Amino acid sequence: MKCTPLVIWGFKMSNEVESKIRLLLKESYEAAKRLLEGLSDRVLIVYHDDADGVAACALLRLALEEKIIVNTICIEKVYPQAVRRLQAKGKEPIIYVDLGGPHLKLIATSNIDCREIVVIDHHDMEAFAAEHLTVLNPESLGLDGEIYACGASLAYFFSRSIKSEVKKYASLAVIGSTEIPGKPKGLNLAALQDAVESGVAAYDEDSSKRSVLWDNRFTSAESISSKLTAMTSVGYYSGGPEKALEACTRCSWKGMEDHLRSLEERRRNAYSKAISEVQRRGLSKLGRIQWFHVKDSFYDLGTKVIGTFCSYLLYRKLVDEDKVLVGFMNMKREIPGIGDLDGEYVKVSARAPSRVLSMIEAKRLEPLSRALADAAQRVGGFGDGHAAAASGIIPKGSEEEFVKIMNEELLPGSVKDSKCASTTLETFLFPKKVEK
Ligand SMILES: [Mn+2]
Image (cartoon, rainbow, N blue to C red; front, side):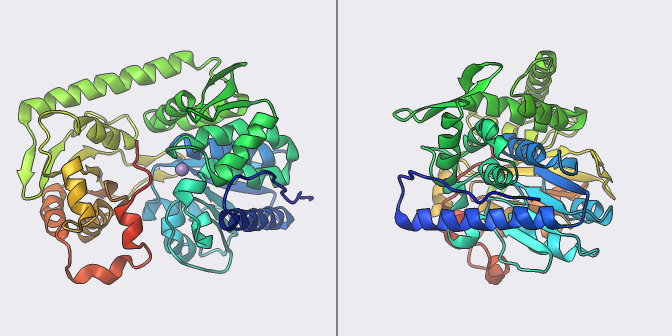
């Protein structure tokens, strides 16, 4: 199998960034080559439930499917149970894309069959090396992955070295990169240049607005991104991720208009039901936390919805600016494509109102990622995220205990400092991206 080394021209960036990007592209090319030289006739792609994740998966599938059988699984979070389950089935290589960076140790130690695993991600990563594990992440070169890359741009260059025709799909990388605020930089800019060259994207440098060819006309990349995210997250349990993959492959919504409308409607109904419940009952308060539980109101929707709902509540009067906002929803046991989780779980999301965020920045409170993850772990769950937004899953019935512990964990300076050594304080304090 032949791979083409990547050549990119005309960067407007510092030499240091440029040389790191070239190094990353070289690593990417070599990883693609190794994957194709392997003996397997199939591959499994595990991707994140948002526009960046699905665009990245579509690019990889486009490049690989003529050569080998491609199976895909969309997951909402890198749950330990989900990782163990999916890695226990089959022997083919696995590509994790737009997720996995913070969980390399879990992924590598669950690799009991010594499968080849490639993690293509741009989130803060855990420093962890293992045999059979290839990591493509700008963070590993000291380049900020949440400024200079996105999952889809990384997947685009990986795919382009396998199949040069993928250049016609560079618009997918442009769609994925809209989750990074501001003007496109680094790999995102390089992918955008390819897309413009191929005639599948247009860029207005002054406004940094990007449009892509979709349904045969130029459409705002951001609007497509938000629809893809709705499909993969709101529609998570109703085949949304596969439909979104299909849409990316065709660069079209054709035949999916009704599905999109019904998703919007389901989300609207669930929101209005939940908001009237929250208004009727008010928020429960404990110390530095205010919280609510929507129980089964979001039951058929993917669990990202509770995070979006928390963000939406942040701007409502009933929210106390001085307390962390925490929301719970009951979640299904089923993970599509993987099976049922052992046990009953609740998804928890936390958001920092602006005044709480200033306290976090002033180091008077712990970043939510740390406080939530520690509290979740202490009740037998799991969590991750950013300073101002974090989420996790915890066993059903442990919600009040969780709130109590998280309230304590929010106070800084306790003995637990060494636990999160792989993530620097700086990356906690200055999150570049907040889950939308
Ligand atoms: Mn991403």
